[in-house]
Length: 640
Image (cartoon, rainbow, N blue to C red; front, side, top):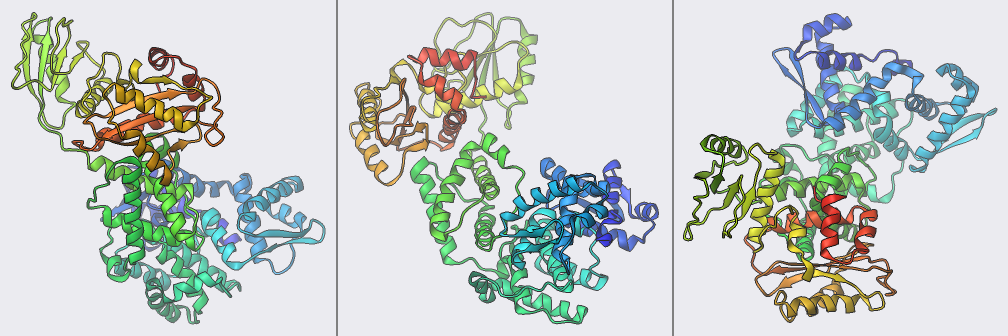
């Protein structure tokens, strides 16, 4: 154990680079009393440890830290820095306990473990109990008694997966691979054009494999599903590489070890440049069919079409590699999952639909971490398929003189990618061109007449975030054939009104309440005659339950209108199948819409309602749209 914990040079290097904008290799070598070659090798290893969340760039012997994902970087950084505390943290002590038990030639006494860590017996027992719970997920056990000794029991593959997923940084920071093996590794990286993320995956598996083999714990018989990797294209890649490693190491590496290393290639993190990988690993027709089914299901359930862009090939490979990771039992951590749930709720909903398709076809379980990565791709697709911004024509109506009008113009310019065309009106002389109306009318004074153009009242110095959201929502509502109402920024709330708010009858079935809502909207001229029947047909093959509290019956509206309605159960529904439903959100989607962005923004609002069970409880007890509006405006603006 001393070999791995006596000096945390990696930690010292990272701290030095963090503290300076640029740090030279000579300065680091002098400070740590090692050669510049050692520093360069350590930097390469550090980039692998950083896992793509950050990287240390090198230019003419000067190093600079670049952070891509602050949250993910801090998690890995903290693990690296924890080594400085040796046994002052429970996490480090558990890593030490696992290390000693997995390599022990005989049962280990608790008193000996306590003495080595210089902690009390009670602390050691507490750490062992925590460790037992964690390793239990890997079908590993700590057997034996305190006085006669403890030993680790379990499958070698599961021991390795635990090491890789949990304590790699604590144990393998300075593992002595040897210069020749390192050179082979970095040549492998260049050959496959792997970035730090993709290579880091392979590097870790290789280090664990070499250590376990050389410490007398070779991989023996693997479960049957792993034998499939023997005929996988990844095996050819690994086979060629390990033949070269055999020459360096002077011993043979058996088939089982090669299959183990295959997991890191078959399930790699998708590299930034897939061109070289595409030459060596081809996507199966099954994977292509699966992705088509995913996108079709998203279109069927959400009426949003995902348009392929230059990232689509990366997405296909991501799904391919993800399925292999999960199939062969390797899990990766994603620090951004909660952020995606909160900030990209529509993309996350698409990931949930994709999850259902993949799990059914592949007989695997997709983890929350992997869900976050799927949502990231969908989030990018949605953002990049938004329509291009055109040049807007804006009227500025100002009662305070030219200087205020110019001030507003300069502030508004900063909100648009394409600079708008402005026209100024003062002292009530506003006139609207009926043939070429304005996209927006901005006014700092009351206007007591109607315009065809949407009107936004502004203070002379305004909140940029607020006004940007206002402009976006006006555009989306205009595309939806609706106008925005003063003081209401949410698309969801603007599409509702008193006529589209329903108090439901708990004694009626769910289907009867849905039909009642559809018939009322049909009589108002909002929905076509066949809408209710299409909802019934759709529910036969796809559930309309958004979550346990919200039903979301939606389908095409043959009338050219985007129609939203809200139904609330003031009391628990007596429907045996849908008894937990508290809100029904009905949506009619016109057959032709200028773009899907309107729907995406509306889904954002709908999913915002679904997030908070307390909010749902309050909404279900409201008797009118007016009550709902006042509650959200004054007490709980869930549409921020």
